[in-house]
Length: 269
Length: 354
Image (cartoon, each protein chain N blue to C red):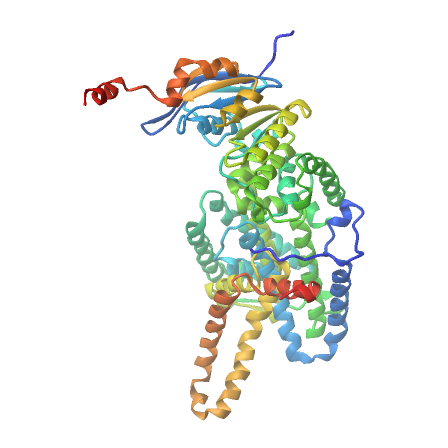
């Protein structure tokens, strides 16, 4: 097997909000074609890490390379152009727009018509381009099985469907790397299975590299290729999923430390 | 805005994506709009000068309101300085025509372009501030511009105002109201179609995305700064166009006409008409302009029954306009267009609608 190429290379990232250290000296890398999971207890800094990659936060120290290019120097909207898509933990759809329009916003950076050609819709190619973009996003709509709601406003959909529309919008960017922030939170078993299938297909069929934050250990162990564990803003483990969940430090972070002194007191009583 | 279904009639099939993006949802709506337009064109010579002048003013205000709606309804910003941009268009058109001899029909869109530039300059703070703070910043543009109008004599004639002639096309003078009405109608149709087109293409979607969730819009690749300022620019363009039409209609432009009261009236138009809707803005402009007339006749009639009201007629009129607006905000906060959509839906779903 050939050496896998590093798509995303995060080195020594530190992020502070005033005196609060959200991330301390985090390094990891994501290989091309991988499903990489970030796990950890609440408040561990997983979403902050994702926000550093997608540009919401600017870390004080460290560097992030994407395809060998420095990511931190780029503006947020530029990162969509070079191929980074993401979904949000708390739904961030354009709730008054129809599902189709939501997904079409993902095509924004690939379309050429502007406000002038848009106003003269019929001349200048806007009509043609809109129809082409529409045909392309229909594939995504088919893939995520949201045909029946394509004309509904996104705000009127159920939670599970909104999560899918958000994923569709992120895929519409045609990303090389997609960042999923808790794609399965708040879903029932069936919906989780569907979502897991989408993530795997996304990875294998579309060839998109996935970085995922997820709390459901079953899903994480089943579908991810590699896992990193954060706790209190520090990376405590990284490796293959099965090895990571067996790690002592990880167990401690998730389950806490046995407080033997308390047990002793109980026995003494 | 709450969602009102607009089902297509049986047999109206779409066979291409272009078909699915039509200007009007159904064939019937397309025909109805064309018939309505033809009716207005044919009927205009017969409605008398009073109604003609009313329609001209509605058309002019509607163009400005459609512009403001791009900014407020679609991009989710706010502007308390729209009347100043409206006024800038009026002065700029008169200035171009008087000082440089630009043909007036050309001076109007040229003035609109100048207003666009001014609007984008005053829109720059919008890239950084939102909500109430932006409202105050645009309020500044209102006062700065009106101050400029009354001081810059080279541009606006200062406190004396500027004369603005009626336009003239190869000897065909737009010197009576009927001809001017057709000119306004032309620009209104162009504005409505252009803005509807804008809203169904890339940049229109970007505006709505910025309004609904600017954080995720940015992650989707939308440049927030660019679109916030662009929205000010496009909104000012239509304000300037409407202002130019206004100035050359009255044949005299004076700084007193463009106070903050007019800015607030523009806001009232789009709120009553329906935020984010092109046709709502037209309805809102008609409502705000016709309401005083309706109230005038209502209070006159009431004065026959209650002679004591005769002296307080004008107060009652003013108060009832305020009351109508308040009642509107309570009972139909989503505007006239929403009420129309509900009527349309209940026709379509007839035996099954409530």
